[in-house]
Every structure is written in C-alpha cells, then in structure tokens.
Image 1: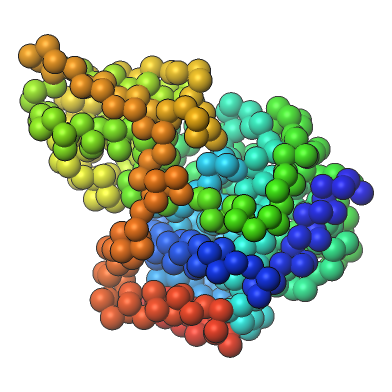
Image 2 (image 1 turned 60 degrees about the vertical axis):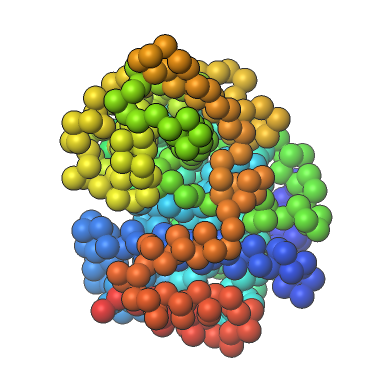
Length: 450
C-alpha cells in the first residue's frame, strides 16, 4: 500500500478534537456556519425544492434533514440535495491551496451521516476536519486538466473520508474507502458553468452521494485499486499526481487546511473575487462612475479567459462571467446574491459596460500562489486617465481575512428569510458550541423548512 495513503488514513483515524489547537476547531466552526448558510440560501431555488422532494420520495423518510425543506431522507439522498443547494448561489467557501471547495464536498455528507447515526457534535467536527484536510490535500497533489472542473472530483474522497470517520473505520478500511471513492469520482468540465447549465450544481451533490456510497460499499465487500487517487488523477482528471505534496506538513499544528481557506463575500466564481476587490478599491479611492469609463482591462489567470461572455444567459452563467461581474459591481455597487438575480441580467447600463471589459491572461498568475498578484485591474476613463490596482489575496481569504462580524452578517443575510432573525441567531449560537452537543440533531432540528 502506498505510504501516502497509509499516512492519510492514520491521520483520519487519529484526529481527535482534544488534540487540536483551538484555532483549528474555531476555524472548523466558522466553515460549518458558512456552509450551512450557503445550503439554506440555495435550498429556495425552485429546482432545489423539487430535488429535495425527489430525495424525500425516493430515499424514503430517513433521519437526515433536507436543509430549508420540510422533508427528510436517508443520508445519501440528503447529502445529494443539500450539497447541490449549497453550491447553487456560489457562496460556499474554498481553499486555494487545494484548488477547490472542500467544505461543500464534506459537510453535507458529514452532517447527513452524523444525523443518521446520532453522532455528537465533537464526532461531527472531527469528521469535517479530517475530510476537509484529505480533500484539500488530494487537490494539492493534482495538476488538474484544463478542461476539468474540480467540483465533485477529489470531493468524493472527502465525503468518503468523513463518512468513514463517523462510522469508526480503522486505518485499513479507511484506505479502502479512499481507493473505492477515487474510482467513483465524477468527471466534470467547465462547460456547464459557462453555458449556465445548472446540472453543474449537482457536481458536489453527486460527490456527496458517491462518497457515502463508497464507504458503505467497502462494508459490502467491494474493493478498490491499490492506489485509486494516482490512477484517476494521473490519467483522466489530472495530468499528474504528486503523492509527496499530498502529505507535506500533514497534521502539523497551524497547517490544517481548514484554517487556510477563503470565504466568499462576492456571490460568484473565485476567479472574480480578486478582480472585484480591485475594482471596488478603485471605485472607493478614485470616485469615478460607469459613465466616466472608456474601457476596463483585467489581467487574470489563464483559466479566467473562458469566463468572458458579456451577456450571460442566466444567473449561473453570470456568476462565471468576469465582464458581467465587473460591470454590475460598477453600475450597482453590489456583488451579493441579488446582483446576479435574473432580473438584473438585462440591465442596459450593466450590459453596455460589460462589453467594454477586456480579459487578458497572465501566464504567471495562479490562484495557488501568494507570491504574485491574482488579478490586475486597469480602468481607463474617457478623460484619458487610467487607474490601476493589483490584488494578491481577496478579502475573505486567510491572507486577507474577513472579520467574524462580516461572516455572521453574511450568514444572517443569506438565511433571515428562511429562519428569521431569532432562528439565524440560534443556529449561529449552536454552531459556536458544536463540540458540546450530545447529538448533532440539536443543530439540524433548527435547519428545517416549514
């Protein structure tokens, strides 16, 4: 068995809350709260309401909560529904070091399985921290193919790891779950994001479903490859897979990946965030308005050059359009979820400016780097002046953190219409003492819809 898999499985089995620094535990609580907010907000989209109904009907009335919905289901279907809702508004956190969104691939599965098993809050947090770590590290080791969207890929392993942790797997069985789940990783491209095909939102839902299934399949006697991740990430989903990078600093205090994440304060793809921070900085400092602008030049990582449609067809496509995101930020001074609602997409002033936004690739830019800008913004005005701004770490990133107050305000904004003021405060308070909960259902009972 490859050494890196042994080390990952040992790490998962040995992860205990009492051995972790308080900063790690507190970071996990913040990530849990943020992800719950994203799932609850996304649960109100019509297709997600119907998916939840399908999950309750098909999976049966199991013990796992369908967040924001009146029904319940067995864990695999609850994870499918909740993870899909959680990514739909592009408000879920992520991890630049791992090149993906670990929490939305781990927390829905962990929450559903913990609820199904009546796990304690401590057990739930341990599974989240372990699953997040493995997810991010597998992502670090992967040089992903250009056409492959990271959603759903190594996240399947994360869901399997969280499930294995909650089910008390030993090291050998945890390794088996990792290998089985690697071979069940969905293969997804960026095309649905750009076209606005909402099947893309199923990527994390599918990985949650598949990850739970992978852990269960090991109990059924199914076996995986000796090294499942190397097989899939060296060939189909990735161009190479560096096993040494996967375990570098594994378990080192202060190096836990859940403490080195980013939160989203703009409701769109991460590639927009450094750009939008740069635009907002210039707007605040220089005082120009949309009518003053001749052109806006954006230098961004090469992948961002596929996100250039100035007239996105729907909300999802708008979240993956740099020109639209920049234009609506200037015209409406807004980048929250309302900025990408369907009724905003045909705004004449926004579309006029969107057509004057140019996207240029800088081959040195890479969102896994912090030693080079992640975006360069140049705003040229009609009077001949040009203003520039470079951004390396967007606001919300660990290297440029949002305050606790900002994160709570984001959570409240997303969930107030669903939970009400009192309900939002109760959830935030309960997440704050997750490690003291005798049963995770003390939290999930607060997350149901009417």
